Length: 211
Image (tube, rainbow, N blue to C red):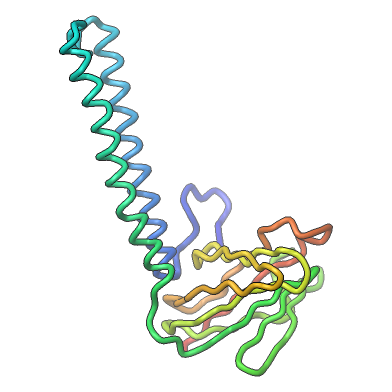
């Protein structure tokens, strides 16, 4: 979970989330380079250095060609790792476990194999306020898990930031994701869709144990 005063993203405990954190750092670094590059050019131009190119037809043509080509190259450098991450989020190996997640107003229902159980917000004073539940979803570590998500009434969103998960639960439709957690621990999330008056009382707790 994100701790008070932290300046970065939450700790990554899945392959996909680790890729998202690395991609975020990469794009931020590239954006800072572009920002300071433009700032230096503007300062040099304001100082009268004439670095903006000649004001005749040829100089303007070269300038327009460069400021069209460079952004295209930068977009390619940003798009390639993004497409790799999208591919990673959809492709996985054989799954050893299947889990069904059903959103209700206002609680979660989990199905592991043939067993289904409800998960409600825990009572006041038990665990983290508005984050803990009475029945946690228990998953094995270092094992690919297929998760199907749907809803019984309105649109919900099953989101666990540390695992890089945020999938809508839509009535009459089963969305799916492949999840592999790289370590043991307890991971907290909440419904991230405005699903009604008790929307803020639908916490998610995933407990990962050694398989």
